[in-house]
Image (tube, rainbow, N blue to C red; front, side, top):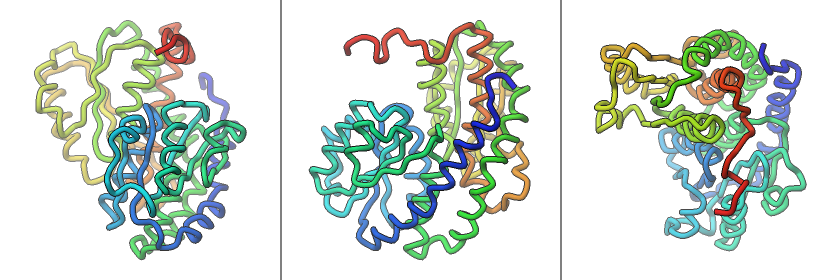
Length: 330
């Protein structure tokens, strides 16, 4: 497949799975001292953690919040401080907004924990607890942390079986990437000259829809996009749908699928250019169906990564090219 090193990909996800003993040790160390959890990030790192705040909000009495780090530092929740667990992720370890928030969170008395692959970065060296892996996504690590916290509170009795099954993810995500590749190629070739498109998601894949629109289509491909939550689609966005409006729907498998169905029914009626990436289309052989919704963010991210590779090729626009981001002062 185009720009896909199966051995490297599998190794990266396996390095995330291998963090399980360390993460479980942290959860045991924290005990019942955590009064709330805040997932603080910027851009993609904020979006990638949205599903895990939602997981706490819907499955636990432990308060969980995802917030934009820079804004949170200026206008924090009054509940943040001693007893708060502040969670961060960073691919480069050098994002100023995130690193400033780490230092600020520590000054407020919060415990800071983060995931990265850059051991010597300012991000890694400033955290109270840092977990290192070569994985380019943080879904497995965040799932282990959050479901571990739930388990410690008696709110997820299936933790051991679920955590065991996460060991299947490296191989299963290879299968997802291979199956998604042809659809990704078709979409990229058809839309290489598109000027504007919608990206829609809901529930625990809404964060990835947000991320993909902002951090890939806009930042890496300079495409004009509208990202909209399925529940909000009918409060303005529907008026922009025409026969030739390109719409990209990201489906997960949690309780919010009916929201996506409603959007799909509408856009199928009024547009001739609708593409669906649905986590339910991937078999995940051997993985317990009861846990499929939990891994939907990882599945949709893996599928969409194939779309990125093909867009880069057909648009002749490398994913690492920027005009302004980290290029000019702002």
